Length: 331
Figure 1 (cartoon, rainbow, N blue to C red):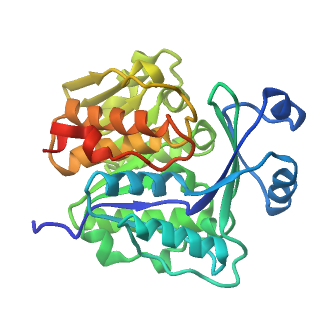
Figure 2 (tube, one colour):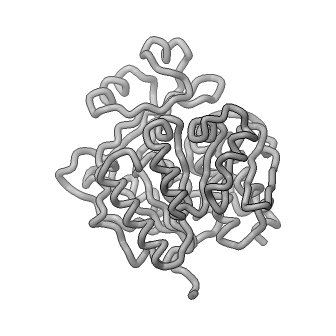
């Protein structure tokens, strides 16, 4: 097979993050559960924005963050996500393309506003996300660049985008393209609320051989397997996919591929500032290793390095030189 145009092509929600500090008392006053993610409508987005503290506006979205991390690690990356033909949409496209990521979906008019996520960060660095999906939930199968998908070594999909009907169909079309071209499909469960709604769908995809690499964190693993104990969850899910990757917070991460298993510790950090994007950047590091045919332990190490960088500052995009941090792993 010829060298692909993209090492990884990411498909996900194109969302502008608005990040603000908040107290536990503020979360309680708004009826919010710390560390959760909820979907809100445009009216609630405007109301909450009006009462939250000063925010920092940064381009985000789970798969978009992963694309940014992959580009920072020297990979050839494409991104497919829907933005509106508005100011936030222009900002998002510019931000992504400035990182060296090829944005493959044109903006659309008449579909409302570009998505935004209002992220409240408490002093313990936990983030509570309030997401208005807007235009992002209108990614349509008709705009999927089939040749680009077929020419990507790995297709990476975020579970968040599975919730609305239109992008679910778009993702299914992309999976079909990737499989027809003999490419690998990576999928992240994204959040327990997504698993609660669509866990059976994801397990069916795995059973049909449509997922080659599955990412989950400990909470998502428990939700999709019904096993509260971490190792029991891994034992139950690992046989369903060729490669299972599970992050476990400050306890590190595990990867299982058939009889092969690897585990790494979390990277040491100076200070924990904001956990937004930790899983996204971990996936970026791991996939960068996969694109280079590195071993499981090396891939996990790259993921841990990228995740450690992003949790030491606000925002879900890397600020330090990830290639320098990776050192000999990318030599």
